[in-house]
Image 1: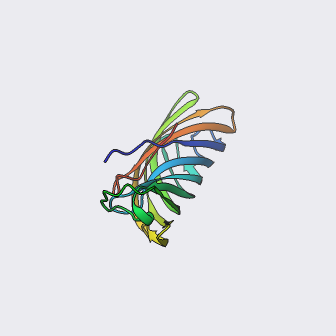
Image 2 (image 1 turned 120 degrees about the vertical axis):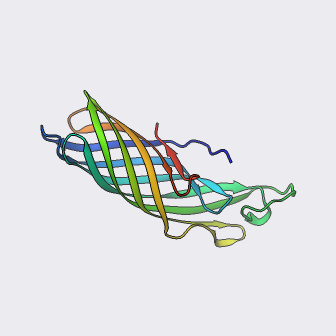
Image 3 (image 1 turned 90 degrees about the vertical axis):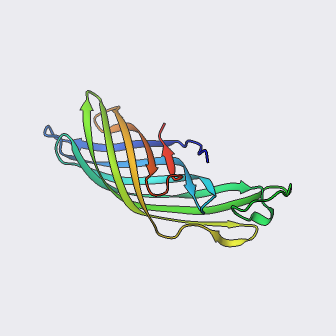
Length: 181
């Protein structure tokens, strides 16, 4: 199944780094991602992210983040049914729900002037639920383990503000993706 790419914009405030590379940054961002809600159905999501990153030296960092957002989409199946084959030509049924992800991560990074490039491995849980014409809570994944591989690039705009881009995919559920832009 082909998965459409998503966008994730990230603004980083207060990256207070000392000369030895140690420091703390707060990440605030907006994400457009693709989230799997059943074995055969993925939906687009718009999420807000908040994270804290601690750098320990020039190349190692760790942190945590919370991501919460709205899932929305349609299914061409009658009455909002999800992931069943159908030859019906009935109109699309709206799907609506929520997604929540809580993550801890570790990673490596390197600086190149005003740019920082990094790679992270994040683990945590994701909780999703979906409502449709068929009723409330018809699909979703409750407190499922996630393991994300991520790549990141940040550009320092000022001493206190950076703009970053993050691309990620869940290693366990490969249909959960977000691509930064």
